[in-house]
Length: 454
Ligand SMILES: Cc1cc2nc3c(=O)[nH]c(=O)nc-3n(C[C@H](O)[C@H](O)[C@H](O)COP(=O)(O)OP(=O)(O)OC[C@H]3O[C@@H](n4cnc5c(N)ncnc54)[C@H](O)[C@@H]3O)c2cc1C
Image 1: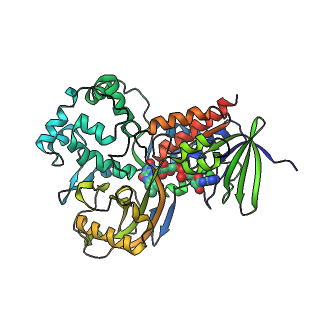
Image 2: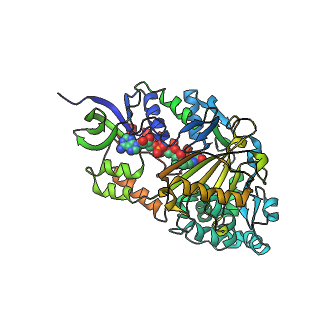
Image 3: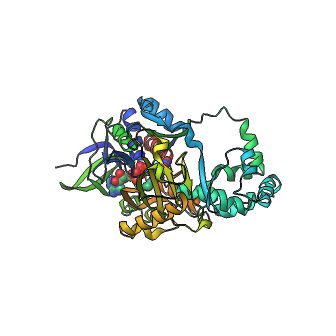
């Protein structure tokens, strides 16, 4: 019996795979999505625990222009829920206190997060000589342009929150491409920012942070339900092989091993999985993909009585710089950000641990993680009673860590992919690491397989 045939197989039903599949479906393609897990959405997972709505993976998303356009094309933008305006207040724990993150030039001049010397160094940025950011780390690039204090007091904590990473290891070109570009083109970040003021006509998407009324898990599930062919869950893609002008995709699931013939394949799976799938096609490509590292994350969802906490629970939450010598990376006040996340009179805190600062946390038993995180939280917020532990979530491979050579590596991967028409990659390791970026990578992959097979 010959293998069944389909236009496109998409491996992975995270936001990248769903976006790719829906985009291809909109273009009239016959698409099958295969996912190893028991539900669509990838790391976007929401659970209800004792009256709290907890996010296991991403807590919110930016909505950049490609994501907004895509959701509008489906009529799905109405399900977005904006974070409350009060969430603009963000804090950094420094010198034993929570201090607001400066969000205006005046606030920057007043912030105690930088000394007078640190502020003068920052103001000198336009006069710093241009250099080649090339393979600099974020700490080297920002330190060179804006000073060491900006690295330690502001940029470091920000990267802890976004990448769970270490600014001394993350590559400047991958993490801050627009700042590197500003230096390259205009000579300084200040001049680049000024020039940007005159390009405000560019479409930018929505301002602020977003979730969905029911959380991001149901949001992803609703997208999956728009697929004509339901996602084949609990099925893992284990390999692909060239077959004439198409590809034979091998899968493994409860019904055993199967093969399907596809003209095009989108691999919207983490880099190590893409490496395994492509090993038989190109070991060079597989080696490049396998070399991309991820940071582990442990999420701790806690319910608290705000009356039993010394600090006021208001705003976005806080981040902890490395110099504070605290294991906790940060904490989001989820019930302040979005309505109906906690029962009346309670607050939902989402703590972030692990990352480059405490990578071994992911292998520790729950009680050890809880003890450490609660001790850190007590030091920062002052807990007068034990918080209610709602969930401990481990992600062994949570966030890609773009190193100094990341941009060059991705360029090499793209170059090698040209040898294999009909195969495209999507996921958060290719460009930005947020939900919106990953979604965009799926849209680009859909366009890629469509144009490369024309
Ligand atoms: C704990 C955590 C917190 C985060 N917080 C935020 C945040 O607040 N804001 C933000 O913007 N971003 C955040 N991110 C990042 C964001 O969630 C991701 O960038 C994005 O969701 C990744 O989507 P994806 O589709 O690329 O990958 P994934 O969501 O990882 O999906 C990949 C899918 O591939 C499937 N798969 C794997 N191997 C195979 C295989 N061999 N065959 C078939 N299927 C396979 C998996 O089951 C999975 O469903 C966070 C990530 C984590 C882990």
